[in-house]
Length: 211
Image 1 (cartoon, rainbow, N blue to C red):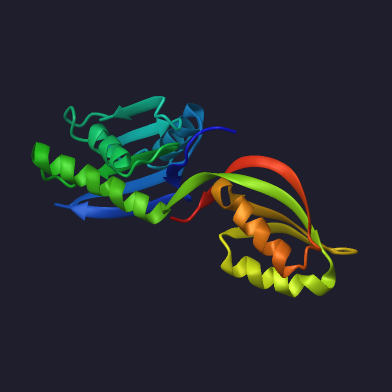
Image 2: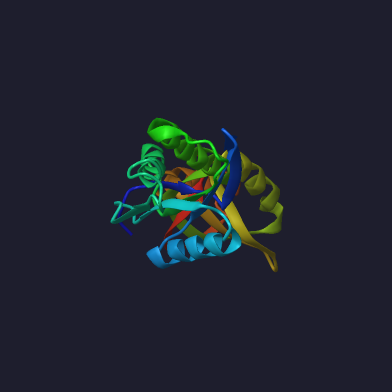
């Protein structure tokens, strides 16, 4: 697997703000295809059919291969582009954001709209959270029961995590480490297990890690 790490959203997020009686509902999602982003957009439009505007932007691909945005009836450059600019300023990819506006009867002007849609996107991103996707090594590990407490304690303080824990004839689990940390982590686990840990490489994948 090749490629650098990248930032994306941790989970779907939703929040809203009210500016001059207009209600702005920001919603953001991680997504890996354009079809997925458009599906979210359709769902929002269906959910809030009575809203005046559904402005959006999405960025798909670790190298920003697909960039799309829409002002959806707002003056050109006042909605979709500010949403896209906020996503790009946070260096986010594989994500989309829709800001729905319920018009409150007071015109905000060009600058006011830009600020409002930027903030609508910002609160959605904050609600979603940000993670860094990094190349992660997967190793299938097994340790005898007498070693497990030492290994478990070591894992709590090492740059690693584990999943698929199974208590069989021995304790087995899948070890996840960033590519750059793998050798250091395995050396430590060998030491604390008195070299009784067995490790079988199981490939790599991109995995979310907190920054």
